[in-house]
Length: 457
Image (cartoon, rainbow, N blue to C red; front, side, top):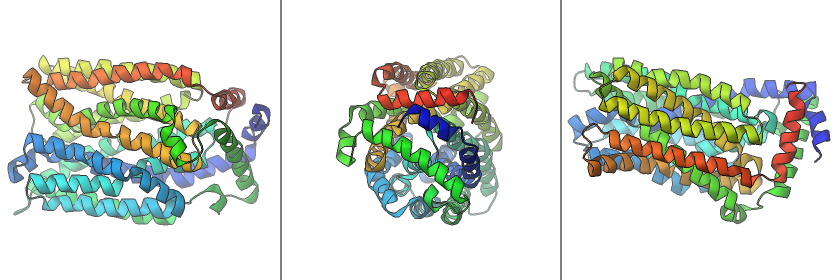
């Protein structure tokens, strides 16, 4: 593929219209799925106090349960990805949502530490494949020029989920606590699990596996989109690994697995404990008020994720912005720990807001790298490997935070928060090192983007 011929395709008004139609048809469904997935994955933070009081789930058991989700997720990630490639996103993503919704609702029946840990593991098993499946789905639908922007829109699900979900979870807990014979956290798990089941049913009727199957595109639009995607796919085949085992042995795949692992430690180390951290900062009980305060960082994260994602559309821009955002994440995580130690609630919430805005914005940038050189079965295996092992950071994060606090005898819990920041700085160093991983595919795709920037897409 020459950059010149691909530029002509990307400048096509027909292609631009096809992409706009695809965005309007597909992205709302994708957002809905991941909004509810992230809500069901992290709402456990709102139930921590209730599970401890009502069911005797200790801090150690809670940390293990919060993290063991990612063990089940990691074990079944690659098989789930390969199955999605075989049966199509339409069926498989719907199946994932329905089964995880059933498990999520079952959390209302938790009776102790053991049942809590088992259900968290099963939640990871049933949700395995959702995130990388959506990454593969978007990579099959959108050209490189707009792919990071689509990833950024997809990532908006995280802040939207927490911005809307935090008050919703707090509200459901407040309502449930007033119901006789019923705990607030039980109502929260039931309602939010049912939402996932409904989302799975809706996605089955609205998702379309590939541009080839899209009836909402006319023949000219479909041909234009298929042609540019085929050209970009040719570059990936020429420069990337071929097949499942080649992808799993590929050095670049493992490099980005480590980067993503560091990112996930920061994300979940903050997210799982955010309601409790805000509660401690403000001196208020976890409920609607804390839920509204927890929504603040995610609200600002919406803007940073989308607007910074639009800027990062070449290799150099992605690298420089990625390094800056990883450093920023570490700095503001450190700041939130300092604020907690020094009893500065307003500063604490500001620092947490800046940290969340930084780590949300860097996620789409990080994912733009592997999708630029992986395709076919290699993409299913490589993206699955990066996401599954990277997400083990979510398993490590609560345990790391708890253990560091214990070793340091940190009464305020600040030592564990500092540990999260250190991993963000490591990720920044690794992101800077990606300049040594540039391939001919990056050079060609960057040439396309820079040329098309002159006319706009």
